[in-house]
Image (cartoon, rainbow, N blue to C red):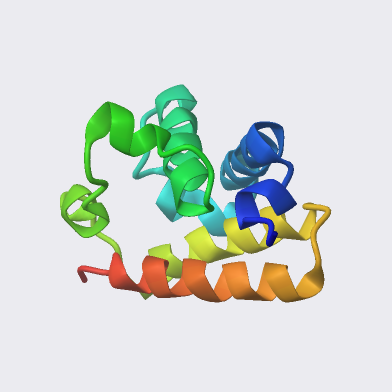
Length: 125
């Protein structure tokens, strides 16, 4: 039986660790200032929503859908100005967060390619 990316990342604990690393990087990297400014001062709800979304997106429990319904990512991100700059800052944080994950390099590259397609789709400027 093939493991899902959710399982490869370590299930709930691994995905939470990835999300926490991602937001810690967003808060600390100067290159992420623009995208950090688009988020609320306290990131706890952002962390929770990304964890729930990634849980289902990576093949684990569909927590986001259970609580909020269909993600409708593009529609939910339309109120925020997202250009290539914000996309690239988001990807920088996710790339570095994934570098810390104990996963196969091929899976890391596949996830980054999927994240890039999704992040690029969020652009509205």
